[in-house]
Image 1 (cartoon, helix red, strand yellow):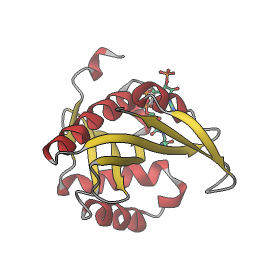
Image 2 (cartoon, protein in one colour):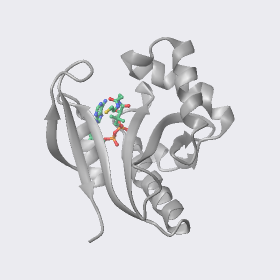
Image 3 (cartoon, protein in one colour):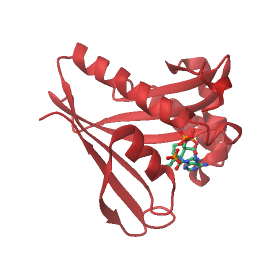
Amino acid sequence: MDDKFKQIKIKRAQKNDLKKIAEIASDCFSGLKNKKDAIKWIKCNFNAFPRMQYFVAKNQKEIAGYVLWMEKGGFRKESVFELEQIAIKKTFQGQGIGTQLVEKSLLEIKNYLKKRKSVLKLVEVTTGSENLAQNLYKKALGAKPECVVKNLFRGDEIIMIARYGK
Ligand SMILES: CC(C)(COP(=O)(O)OP(=O)(O)OC[C@H]1O[C@@H](n2cnc3c(N)ncnc32)[C@H](O)[C@@H]1OP(=O)(O)O)[C@@H](O)C(=O)NCCC(=O)NCCS
């Protein structure tokens, strides 16, 4: 990793981060290209805390990327989370920031669950069959491909699962 990115801080997103998150989302995902739709999407997710939890990677004061975690199936003792969305600003990609963001935000999710007296059972994440993000999910989560959904968004989508605990 580039030395200048060793100081990246991973933090829970605050309300005043949402505009920047929406800009990155809009640049990275065709479904959020429309900026008004992007901010609406981000705001309604942010307002769904604690089911939805955003974290940002900050390079000094600049937001380099974000991740959205989403709890599935209720507030269970053995909790199931989905890594619902992650994006790193184009100029920051490929420099280890996504890896840090996933690893450190996952620790925050585990801390949150500990306070709730729950444990993390598994993480689900899906990505396009051609997307290199699969490497990120293998490396940072220990996720493995379990099945393929044909023609979900723009093509086939791989469902990857990381199983923890017992
Ligand atoms: C996917 C993404 C979040 C990875 O973040 P990053 O900071 O670029 O990733 P890292 O530098 O930590 O690299 C982790 C792995 O991701 C993969 N990766 C690197 N650059 C990537 C890129 N531009 N796009 C996709 N994957 C990339 C690499 O295979 C890397 O593994 P390696 O180090 O073993 O080669 C980021 O590139 C991105 O925002 N892409 C566009 C949005 C997107 O596709 N999000 C995921 C949707 S499922």
